[in-house]
Length: 286
Image (tube, rainbow, N blue to C red; front, side, top):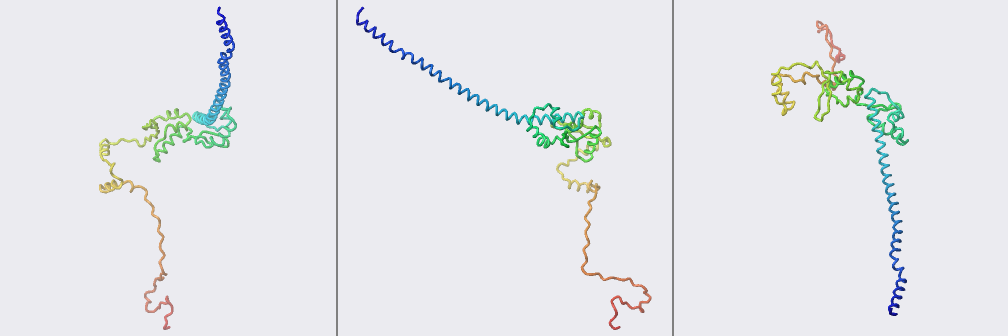
């Protein structure tokens, strides 16, 4: 073999052996970058953990506030239900928490219920550190409901919402069913039912001809003064004249200026020429 080629071969091998580090440099750089990435991933995970803890704390705060009002709503609903079932005796807060299974609440929440929430709630009545439900109408039985409806009708207050009756009358459905036709139901446009007292003394037949005449007279555009004037022209007295008359205030008499001269009755007219009048003093000529 040519010696020149052998020398070139040896030089090539030497160059190849002298440059292995250059060939391994990309591998070392990859491993270094891989090692550097690990702490970065760890930093990301730590920041993610921190963010997760912050969000958890935020949820805990919201849950704490919502939990308080959730406890209050549960207590009010429980007190309403037991009142409707006939259990109207008052309970202490510990008894209420025991009945509603809210024994895991903290002391701060318990103080909040005692000092703020239950005291200011319009549906809770406080009596000697005990609590009871406070309906709009506190009705004991069906007779009390009938008296209330009759009173509203006589005073012109109208009917009573069925929701208010069910709220304040224990076993309301049973009591209303027992009253039967003594109560009239009227459904409003908003689908809510109103109860009225069915006064049977006011039930009378009105002649159909009179009903037609009544409905044929339009009074929408006429005020009360014109209606009263029309009735007077027809010789009909209005209802206002039959009502109680207004009592006018008594006017005090004015004191007359000066003194009135006293007047005396004269007697013994047959001695008019003999007797003399000394009411104004003795005459000067005497």
